[in-house]
Length: 164
Image 1: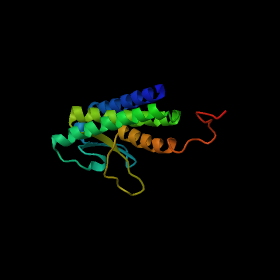
Image 2 (image 1 turned 90 degrees about the horizontal axis):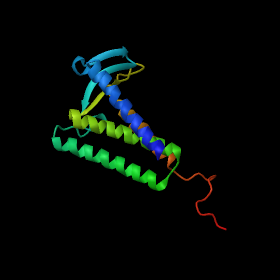
Image 3 (image 1 turned 90 degrees about the vertical axis):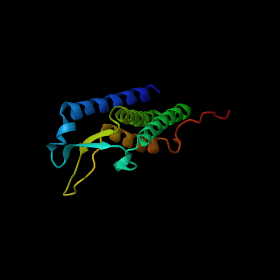
Image 4 (image 1 turned 30 degrees about the vertical axis):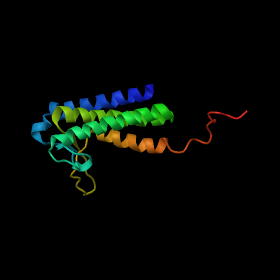
Protein backbone atom coordinates (compact mmCIF):
# COMPACT_ATOMS: atom_id res chain seq x y z
CA UNK A 1 0.00 0.00 0.00
CA UNK A 2 2.94 2.29 0.51
CA UNK A 3 3.72 2.03 -3.22
CA UNK A 4 0.17 3.13 -4.07
CA UNK A 5 0.31 6.09 -1.68
CA UNK A 6 3.69 7.33 -2.89
CA UNK A 7 2.66 6.95 -6.55
CA UNK A 8 -0.60 8.83 -5.95
CA UNK A 9 1.12 11.67 -4.09
CA UNK A 10 3.92 12.03 -6.66
CA UNK A 11 1.41 11.95 -9.55
CA UNK A 12 -0.78 14.55 -7.86
CA UNK A 13 2.20 16.85 -7.13
CA UNK A 14 3.63 16.59 -10.68
CA UNK A 15 0.19 17.33 -12.13
CA UNK A 16 -0.38 20.37 -9.95
CA UNK A 17 3.14 21.74 -10.44
CA UNK A 18 2.86 21.35 -14.22
CA UNK A 19 -0.47 23.22 -14.20
CA UNK A 20 0.91 26.01 -12.03
CA UNK A 21 4.09 26.33 -14.11
CA UNK A 22 2.42 26.29 -17.51
CA UNK A 23 -1.08 27.68 -16.99
CA UNK A 24 -0.08 30.34 -14.45
CA UNK A 25 3.72 30.68 -14.76
CA UNK A 26 3.83 30.90 -18.56
CA UNK A 27 0.52 32.81 -18.49
CA UNK A 28 -1.09 30.30 -20.84
CA UNK A 29 -4.38 31.22 -19.22
CA UNK A 30 -4.18 34.59 -21.05
CA UNK A 31 -1.92 33.73 -24.00
CA UNK A 32 -4.07 30.80 -25.12
CA UNK A 33 -1.36 28.96 -27.06
CA UNK A 34 2.41 28.51 -26.99
CA UNK A 35 4.29 26.61 -29.69
CA UNK A 36 6.83 24.34 -28.00
CA UNK A 37 7.71 21.87 -30.77
CA UNK A 38 4.91 22.28 -33.31
CA UNK A 39 2.95 20.34 -34.32
CA UNK A 40 4.19 17.58 -32.02
CA UNK A 41 3.81 19.60 -28.82
CA UNK A 42 1.83 22.79 -28.37
CA UNK A 43 0.61 24.25 -25.09
CA UNK A 44 -3.01 25.10 -25.84
CA UNK A 45 -5.28 26.30 -23.03
CA UNK A 46 -8.56 24.44 -22.75
CA UNK A 47 -11.04 24.37 -19.89
CA UNK A 48 -12.79 21.03 -19.66
CA UNK A 49 -16.03 21.26 -17.75
CA UNK A 50 -17.02 17.71 -18.63
CA UNK A 51 -15.29 14.37 -18.92
CA UNK A 52 -13.16 13.00 -21.77
CA UNK A 53 -13.26 15.15 -24.90
CA UNK A 54 -15.64 17.57 -23.17
CA UNK A 55 -18.56 15.13 -22.89
CA UNK A 56 -21.25 16.28 -20.43
CA UNK A 57 -19.70 19.74 -20.42
CA UNK A 58 -22.75 21.83 -19.72
CA UNK A 59 -22.02 24.78 -17.50
CA UNK A 60 -24.33 23.71 -14.69
CA UNK A 61 -22.67 23.84 -11.30
CA UNK A 62 -24.40 20.58 -10.42
CA UNK A 63 -22.40 18.79 -13.14
CA UNK A 64 -19.16 20.14 -11.70
CA UNK A 65 -19.93 18.84 -8.21
CA UNK A 66 -21.29 15.54 -9.54
CA UNK A 67 -18.02 14.95 -11.42
CA UNK A 68 -16.06 15.80 -8.27
CA UNK A 69 -18.13 13.30 -6.28
CA UNK A 70 -17.74 10.61 -8.95
CA UNK A 71 -13.95 11.07 -9.10
CA UNK A 72 -13.67 10.85 -5.31
CA UNK A 73 -15.96 7.81 -5.19
CA UNK A 74 -14.00 5.98 -7.90
CA UNK A 75 -10.71 6.81 -6.16
CA UNK A 76 -12.06 5.51 -2.85
CA UNK A 77 -13.40 2.34 -4.50
CA UNK A 78 -10.07 1.63 -6.26
CA UNK A 79 -8.21 2.15 -2.97
CA UNK A 80 -10.60 -0.22 -1.16
CA UNK A 81 -10.35 -2.80 -3.96
CA UNK A 82 -6.54 -2.79 -4.02
CA UNK A 83 -6.37 -3.01 -0.21
CA UNK A 84 -8.83 -5.92 -0.21
CA UNK A 85 -7.44 -7.99 -3.09
CA UNK A 86 -3.72 -7.11 -2.87
CA UNK A 87 -3.13 -7.81 -6.59
CA UNK A 88 0.59 -6.97 -6.51
CA UNK A 89 3.05 -4.10 -6.91
CA UNK A 90 2.27 -3.27 -10.55
CA UNK A 91 -1.42 -2.98 -9.79
CA UNK A 92 -0.59 -0.74 -6.81
CA UNK A 93 1.42 1.54 -9.11
CA UNK A 94 -1.45 1.63 -11.60
CA UNK A 95 -3.94 2.42 -8.84
CA UNK A 96 -1.68 5.18 -7.54
CA UNK A 97 -1.50 6.76 -11.00
CA UNK A 98 -5.29 6.65 -11.39
CA UNK A 99 -6.00 8.02 -7.91
CA UNK A 100 -3.33 10.75 -8.08
CA UNK A 101 -4.57 11.88 -11.49
CA UNK A 102 -8.22 11.83 -10.48
CA UNK A 103 -7.52 13.91 -7.38
CA UNK A 104 -5.43 16.35 -9.43
CA UNK A 105 -8.41 16.98 -11.69
CA UNK A 106 -10.71 17.24 -8.65
CA UNK A 107 -8.57 20.12 -7.33
CA UNK A 108 -8.90 21.87 -10.71
CA UNK A 109 -12.69 21.57 -10.61
CA UNK A 110 -12.76 22.98 -7.09
CA UNK A 111 -10.31 25.85 -7.76
CA UNK A 112 -11.13 26.77 -11.37
CA UNK A 113 -14.58 25.24 -11.87
CA UNK A 114 -13.11 23.16 -14.72
CA UNK A 115 -10.09 20.99 -15.47
CA UNK A 116 -7.12 22.91 -16.89
CA UNK A 117 -5.93 21.08 -20.01
CA UNK A 118 -2.89 22.39 -21.88
CA UNK A 119 -1.03 19.63 -23.74
CA UNK A 120 -1.84 19.33 -27.43
CA UNK A 121 -0.03 16.88 -29.66
CA UNK A 122 -0.46 16.32 -33.38
CA UNK A 123 1.47 14.29 -35.90
CA UNK A 124 1.76 13.27 -39.47
CA UNK A 125 -0.64 15.82 -40.93
CA UNK A 126 -3.42 14.90 -38.50
CA UNK A 127 -4.49 17.92 -36.44
CA UNK A 128 -5.55 16.93 -32.93
CA UNK A 129 -8.17 19.41 -31.66
CA UNK A 130 -8.05 18.16 -28.07
CA UNK A 131 -5.87 19.12 -25.13
CA UNK A 132 -5.11 17.09 -22.01
CA UNK A 133 -2.93 17.29 -18.90
CA UNK A 134 -0.60 15.18 -16.77
CA UNK A 135 -3.50 13.92 -14.65
CA UNK A 136 -5.31 12.69 -17.76
CA UNK A 137 -2.22 10.72 -18.82
CA UNK A 138 -1.92 9.20 -15.33
CA UNK A 139 -5.61 8.25 -15.25
CA UNK A 140 -5.39 6.60 -18.66
CA UNK A 141 -2.17 4.69 -17.90
CA UNK A 142 -3.46 3.74 -14.45
CA UNK A 143 -6.75 2.41 -15.79
CA UNK A 144 -5.00 0.35 -18.48
CA UNK A 145 -2.54 -0.92 -15.86
CA UNK A 146 -5.38 -2.01 -13.58
CA UNK A 147 -6.97 -3.95 -16.44
CA UNK A 148 -3.69 -5.65 -17.30
CA UNK A 149 -2.35 -6.28 -13.80
CA UNK A 150 -5.51 -7.33 -11.96
CA UNK A 151 -6.70 -9.98 -14.40
CA UNK A 152 -6.36 -13.69 -13.85
CA UNK A 153 -4.05 -14.66 -10.99
CA UNK A 154 -0.50 -15.67 -11.80
CA UNK A 155 -0.49 -19.47 -12.12
CA UNK A 156 3.10 -19.65 -10.92
CA UNK A 157 2.18 -17.99 -7.61
CA UNK A 158 1.64 -20.18 -4.58
CA UNK A 159 -2.00 -20.62 -3.50
CA UNK A 160 -3.04 -18.72 -0.37
CA UNK A 161 -4.37 -21.80 1.44
CA UNK A 162 -2.28 -24.76 0.31
CA UNK A 163 -3.72 -28.21 1.03
CA UNK A 164 -1.71 -30.35 3.38
